[in-house]
Image (cartoon, rainbow, N blue to C red; front, side):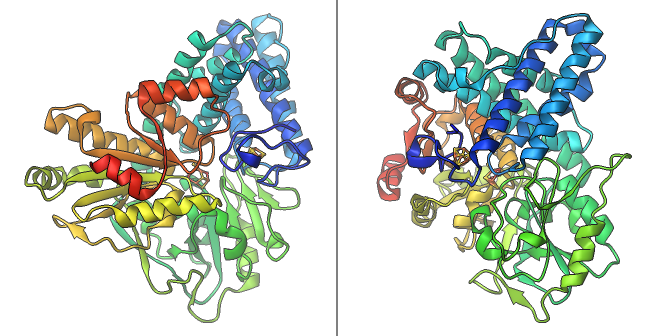
Length: 530
Ligand code: FSO
Ligand code: SF4
């Protein structure tokens, strides 16, 4: 196998043995390559048969989102499910070719990409991984009934370009930036889908103690799945607790009104094997990051949407487009939950605060602007992104702890669990540490930065704002490309640089975008504030 798409890749170079560091086995990796190659074939067929494809577009688009999402790190470990997806992609390709009276384009061989000239491989990887991340966001929006034709069309366009053997850096670098541009529209779409469906997030305290009685833990990013689960558990005597990236769900008015959405259990994804080991409750994974379940809880794991693991019960979509979470609820009742209040994390009794989305932050923009003008706020940091298992990730906690007292720290995504237990106090009546939401809510951070720049009559790069980002998987890749597309300079990136960034591509990132690999919190803070 060959896979180097995530931050924990073996030796910071590539997973090449019988299994990847994430637990993905070689045959699964090969099937994911095959699925990607089939999606490229489908995309080229769509490109060659534009008029015929128009009639079948939404179904094709949804399948492409689903297929790409299945290849994101820690999503689909199930060979059977991957084979089914490949079959569906082939059938869709044949359907389109037939409707348009054209030839179906063949599958693309991913080995061509992995063995391409170093910089071509690097840039095509950036494009492919960015598309995978973007497809995940498009999928969440689609689940709520929101689609953007330009976003869907670009998924095809980008995939089709991977088979272009002649494309060099002159084509591929702008294409990677285009991924960033389209991903901005995609995150905007998801933001609209989330806020129009569930309301504007509001600052919310989230309990971290599990109450006695049956409960379900829900992980991942899909708010639509959470809403369905809350509806189906209502009145059943089963409470619901979030884990990892689902924490910000507590801030949405239409979700927090469910009295049995009780709190948050545990922390970020890489701690799941420890945090789920002894729970008298089932765990529902709506998206990444799923780790191969340990024996102690494998029979309590349920997956849904694009997530799949061999042997784990999967809740699929029924005929009417709904989902029946009955088996998860039955399991929760069977297991019964704790008999006493229980805290999974060490800092028992404390709460998390979330819900500082762009709606809330911009709602107090005047206060923020005044605080800057009066010198009460000297600097803004956005410290966010994905968490992961590497020891170097303590950097982010140390960094936040050392930020000056007159600075504000915005955060988002699961990387926040490195430090969201810290009490950094307040500044001008606002908390110094504000959780803006999930990784896709990077859109909100961008909105806030642009609005601040407008108020101060300067560019985003002229603001006293520094982005310190942790990355792990492919959603972080598309977000990084969006930030670069917007011309945002001076980003600090860690804990290590992507293995798929070649020295020449890194040179471009450093020269044109002033991207810094993180060093030590002391050194980086001195450089930023100096
Ligand atoms: Fe984290 Fe996983 Fe949200 Fe990622 S749970 S690592 S960037 O999937 O998507 O932040
Ligand atoms: Fe390795 Fe990451 Fe690929 Fe898993 S997703 S095989 S850990 S590079």
